[in-house]
Amino acid sequence: MLQNDISLAAHVTKPITHDLVRRADLIIVMEFTQYVDLLQKYPAAERKVFRLGDFHQGLAKEIWDRFGGTNGDFEFCFQMIRRCCDNLMAALRSQAS
Image 1 (cartoon, rainbow, N blue to C red):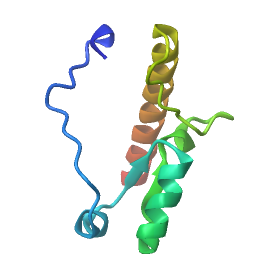
Image 2 (tube, rainbow, N blue to C red; image 1 turned 90 degrees about the horizontal axis):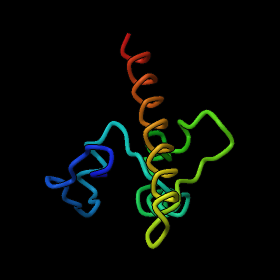
Image 3 (cartoon, rainbow, N blue to C red; image 1 turned 45 degrees about the vertical axis):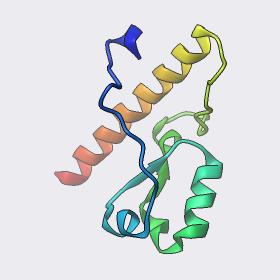
Image 4 (cartoon, helix red, strand yellow; image 1 turned 180 degrees about the horizontal axis):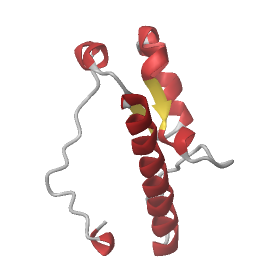
């Protein structure tokens, strides 16, 4: 992230709770297993859970954790995430207008 001038200093993970799921308008996960696990625990959230890769506009839908990978692996993953986030933002803007 630092190579791309992005700081994660303020990033904090937090567990998913019933209240968070209930209040969320949109829930984005990275991997299919996360998608399945979330829907098993919170089936009522089905219409608001998406994989980030759903916004890739290509064949790849999975964004695998590159932990332990090469710098090239991380850069590939970063670019895919960036592309998906850009497409997600475009979709949200389109829905808002």
